[in-house]
Length: 120
Image (cartoon, rainbow, N blue to C red; front, side, top):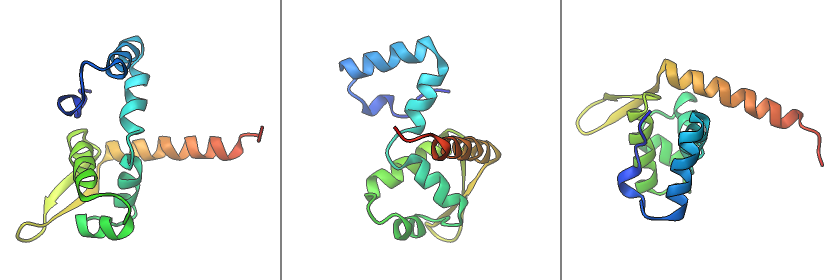
């Protein structure tokens, strides 16, 4: 899947170049990069739990800025993880798609794996 943030990133940076090399080496590297973006999985999970509007998400996640929340909602929608539905004048609600629920299932298994990990 195409990255949604390429246009806002500094494409001449070493980090950007390294991320592209890793993405070419294995699609998992690109997937991990995209889902690890700050607030991304928390926004998806919060919508899943019923916080389905921008305002509800702001109340649930007061530390996230409006700019970042808006960006994450656009990314999640563009990636097919959320659907955006009109709900009155200039208001929208979000729902988790089948693809989004699949990702949340995977993330739950990763959380279960981490909880079961022995402490070092």
